Length: 115
Image 1: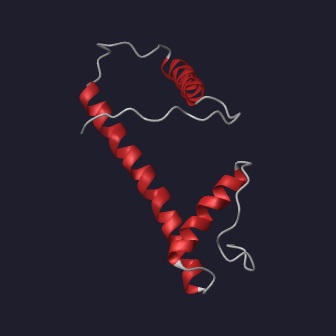
Image 2: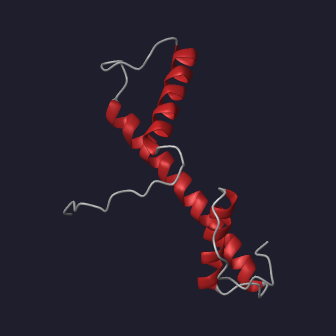
């Protein structure tokens, strides 16, 4: 895969992603120190390859769970005749944006709420 330059990000008033990631890393470090009484140093007696593999499995499980939940909601809406699959997925994205405080113009049949 070739890495190609992306367009510059558009400012939107939301917090920078790196700042959020760093906050999460600091919180995880604090939890580890509280739980184990030490920060996580290299050569700590654990097999880092096993840890990384297990973390990857947990991450995959979380993404699969999230996807299954969205697909289930989509199927329920479609069976109820409240949305066409293509439009329902777009509606789910619009609901997420609205929940995050972003305005978006409805493109899904706005006579029926999605849920």
